[in-house]
Amino acid sequence: MPTGCSKITKIVLPAIRRTISLELSESGFNQTEIAKALGLAQAAVSKYLSGNCSESIIKLSDEIRSEGLAKGIIASIKSGKDRKEIDDEIDNLCAVLAARSA
Image (cartoon, rainbow, N blue to C red):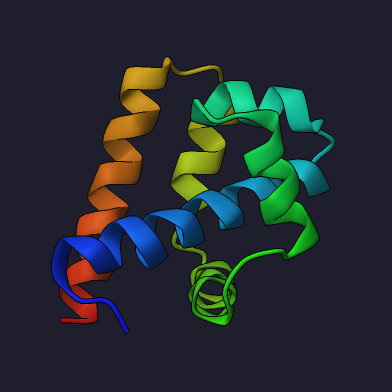
């Protein structure tokens, strides 16, 4: 399993993005809207929604969802906050999750 920065970029951040993608999709957002909100390619959102990612990403994403850790970010996206604010919230959650698993 990756450690440090590698773990953040390969597992933690993708798990957060997958969680947000799933939640927004379930709220009626389409893949293009989700991609725009997260600054991702539509193909990346499609991958997250289809579960075409590593078991580590899926497991962490499921934990994030079950604990409701991304609810604030999702609410910010739905309320139309700008990408900078969304990115800052994602960075904060990423740091919390990285510290938790350290």
